[in-house]
Length: 427
Image 1 (cartoon, rainbow, N blue to C red):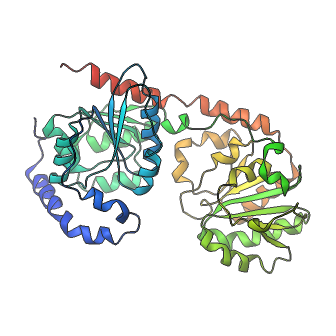
Image 2 (image 1 turned 60 degrees about the vertical axis):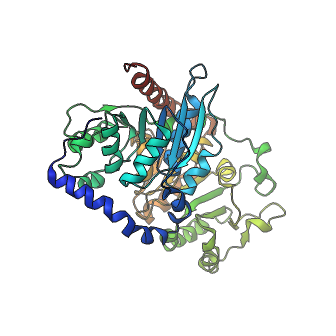
């Protein structure tokens, strides 16, 4: 057990931070995102279930990475995992995860970052190793692991310039709490972690998210349930995962597309279905029939707009689209999943705001796999140009898979790193 050598000012700061949790709890209970799992996170006792590895996965995205590691752990080498998460959404991802062979998995809500909660969690599970994913820097969790002699790995590590600036408000706190190993997903992010932890060498690894990219072929027209409504080779344009902040920007674009191509069919997919009534108002004066997806019973006439009011069909729509705009990107919202249309052989059009998916890398744009625009006129021009072409889906899909394959291997790197820490340590 070795106490991290924190300056006295930082020790006092952590003591105050620890005491603030009871005060903060009522405010956390007011958060719809945090509240559902908070009662479990407030637990002070846990049933004793020793685990070799504790993986902390903040929410949905990190839970998917943890799932990839657990599922890919070698079947011949039994290991016990406890994977914790902060949210109900993260827990939903973990429910379907089953390790191979005789390995085992316990799912748990992560304790709040206060001494009593973290110590009780560690006392119950007795992990030999803690794995943090992406950007998980909880000071008391890190401090407690130092005290308990538990190595900490930060894998698939990401750190934006903005987050680094926030962490550097307390520059003396982080170096003594630094994880034993940090593997970042890019050289730029490795450099940021080097600044934060005052280390010269912090490694890199392929992003595990590339291992999760589907390699299945584009959905054939005859196997697509939407083929009952949209004829083959239709000039079908998809506006996918559109956010509220983009609606008024897109209405003039939709009007121009219909004027230039009156025989086209447009599919509008609001990101949130409670926006349907607003979309009906937006589309009312465009002079085109507006049909609800749930009411379709026959093939759609050219020059129509389909407003999607059902879940789970966006991928099928991309598989039929001549072109597609992926929302959350024309306004500064971080972007939505533009890899979905690519997996269907469609080169997507996105706006300039796609920080949520910047792990994919800008090479995907320079290689012509994604079209990035900066404003409404650019979006309209890109849509019209794409509608005039008819690219080979198989060729686009194969180029995308080649891009992905060259960047895979993150899960293998993570497992190799875990094994190195677990099985090279003296017993």
